[in-house]
Image (cartoon, rainbow, N blue to C red; front, top):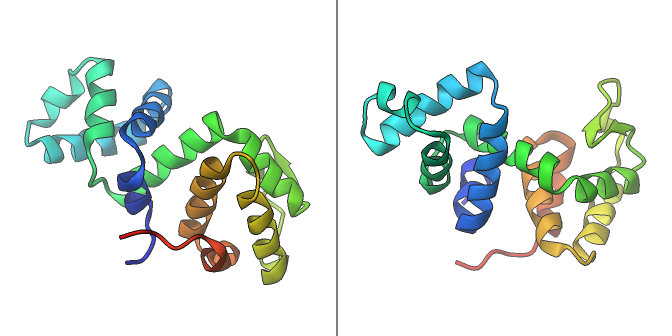
Length: 162
């Protein structure tokens, strides 16, 4: 089964999904909120107004418990969580590749296609050998989902257990 943001989300332990949901709900954009309100209402089989009126704690728990989110939402949840809780891992990987960035966000003018496949994979192997392997794996899976130059990382990720 191909890797997707939603698949990564479903594989996370509940406590990680709760943490990611807390980070997300701390500062969602209006568009993200709208989209997630609708997705949660559908998943919980309730009216959207009920979701909008729910207290923050309930929104966090509902989000964490919803295992089938649209990829765009799951991607936003993962990105916010990684930037908030795993910035050191992101920075390590970008620096292994000498990619210019500002607090984990790659500079706009950097051409990812200029990265040789072997270099991307070697940096991924180095990151996977780091003490925080779980964080490294999560970040690298997230990158694979982004596609493009990052898709070659999938070849060095450990095989998943069924």
